[in-house]
Length: 134
Image 1 (cartoon, rainbow, N blue to C red):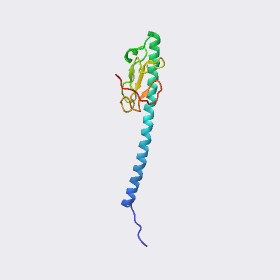
Image 2: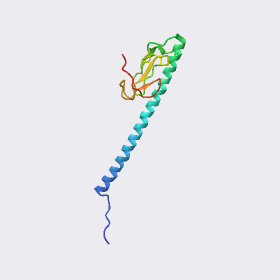
Image 3: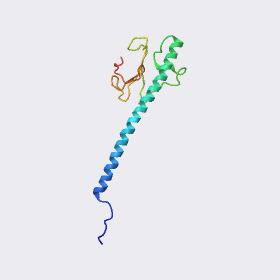
Image 4: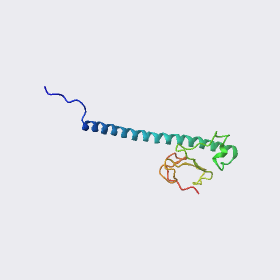
């Protein structure tokens, strides 16, 4: 009787490693997309909280504060950062100059730069093109 070969050939081992690598790559991409979605959702939640605090401040003082620090400690325990650990951009006069958007509150998103597609504006909570702060 012919002897049976035991063990794994180099080709078989390389094929298994290739398949595991492809599965790992697909998993990492899927997890990365979900992580960015979660960061965006948490940032929007924080922006909504700041927006409410600003509106409450305005009702109490008849104007908006010059900085977000004026909200601490009465309206906020502390000024939060976005999920990318950056400060929100706040301008009390607003660039739109309209009563519907009396102030600017923007997260620069993942890029960290104003004017990129990943910026989030409190007034529409969508990525927007925004002008650079002055």
